[in-house]
Each structure stands twice: as structure tokens, then as C-alpha cells.
Image (tube, rainbow, N blue to C red; front, side, top):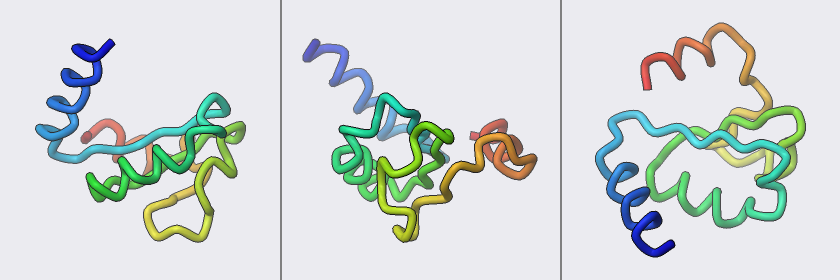
Length: 78
């Protein structure tokens, strides 16, 4: 498990345009996901089921916009 975490960290550190996507399974991990997003200065996009994982008022939280064309464009470019 430690090797997988180290590999994930290395990939995130190299990412040019990281995005954090949170679904319903992330509801209990919102604080950790928010800390990662803040460290990376990455926008957070949630699914409908993931709404509430992080505060909607947080500047990095874009909310449940996964299916919007502008979000799809952003994902394609990331």
C-alpha cells in the first residue's frame, strides 16, 4: 500500500492541471480530499452523489458540474 501511495503522490506532483473528482464514496473523506486539492490548487468537481463531501462555498469547489460541456473540456485537457 505504501508503494501505491508514493506512486500516486509522484503522479500528482507531476500533474500540470490536476482535478479532484469526488463521488459518493468520498463523503467521509472530504477533509482529506480538500487538503489534497488545496496543496495542488486543483478544482474539485463532484458527482451528484458526492455533493457535500467538501463545502460548496470553498473557492476550489465547482460543485456537481461533471456533465457540463465546459467541465468535459477541462477534463479532456487535464
